[in-house]
Image (cartoon, rainbow, N blue to C red; front, side, top):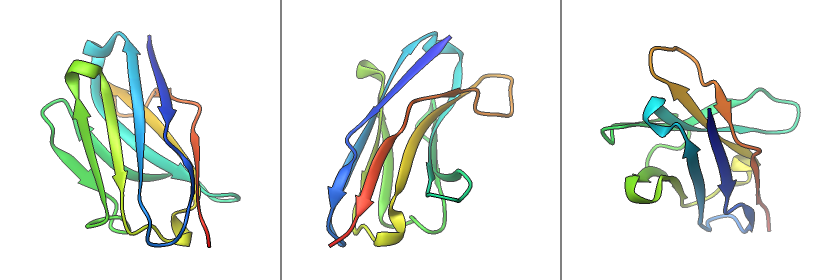
Length: 118
C-alpha cells in the first residue's frame, strides 16, 4: 500500500506562483512514477506532470515552461512548482502513484484546491 498526501494549494492571483507538495509513505519501493493530475469542475482528470525514480520528467503542453516537477527522495516528497499561473489552471490537483509492472496510477491523494483569480 502507498499513501499520498497533497498540500500547498490556495488562492493566487494570475501571474503568481504556488508550490504543491506530495508526501509519499508506505511501500515506496513499489512505485514506478509519481504524477500530478488536475480536475476542473465538470471536466475529466488530466495529466499535468510526472516524474520517474531516476528524475526523468514529462509535462502536459499547457504547462511546459511554467511548471516544474521535482522529487526529494530523502523526504519522500514530490513537488510541483507552478509559476505564471493562469485562471485556466484553477482545479483540484491530485498526486498519483503508478506501481511498478502496471500501466495505471493505482494510488491517489485526496487533492488540493488551486484557485487562480484576481
